[in-house]
Length: 336
Image (cartoon, one colour):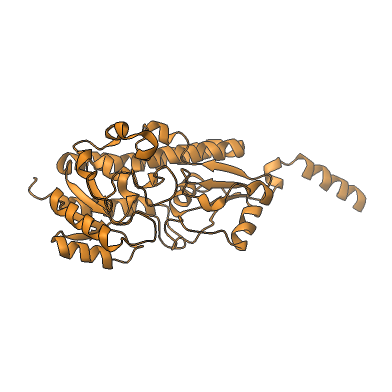
């Protein structure tokens, strides 16, 4: 009798769906924005576990190096969701040696083409093509003469890659990221495709509502000139019609030298910048000094690259909404 029961149990297990037998799908995300997006897409799917590889306190991982713990997490993962466009240079090119079966989902897939090379380095395109990537209303020549401390709209990035990877600051581009993550997860686990698509549809609706607010605000603040700490807000500025005259940091983690500081201050005065925006992950001392020297008010915007250890599903929308309130209050002077 016992043998018969064992045989019946084996037969029953053999009839179970494959995904019910296997362990949960381990989805590892590199940075906070892709983690929040992926969490929303995989919401309420019991056998899909989403985790974050880097600490949400880290910020942009431009100078990050992989640790043994990171390698262990990569080795255990089924899917690795990345931002792409060079933000994860620290991953290197040998992940297959760590995990031969790892599936990498690049959330930036196709976005660069949609942006028509907006963020490509000017020196790789030629000086005659730089104006093609300038924001509306920007005079490129204003940023060319004797201002080596001034960089603009992705032409001189604060990271080592040729493209600006900070696409997540724009809800419009975040929608494309969500679609890429949705498609990647659906291809890996087609048994959950319907749920992935349903979750993505609901989340995209929220991002579309955010973008609608941005379009409305852009009508009031378009053409205003600002300065940011580094180039993380370039895509959001494009959506808002803002002109980023200069960035304070040319190289991630390195404050400007004295000569560059003077060039930045001079450029701000000449361009009649109306606001300087810093970020919570940077020390405000340099930005405060520039604000004091130029008499331009200083404010803080959050790019949603840092956050709590267990960010809620609505964390991205909350942060972007708060940014829009700040932009409305600081840049909408004199408009109804």
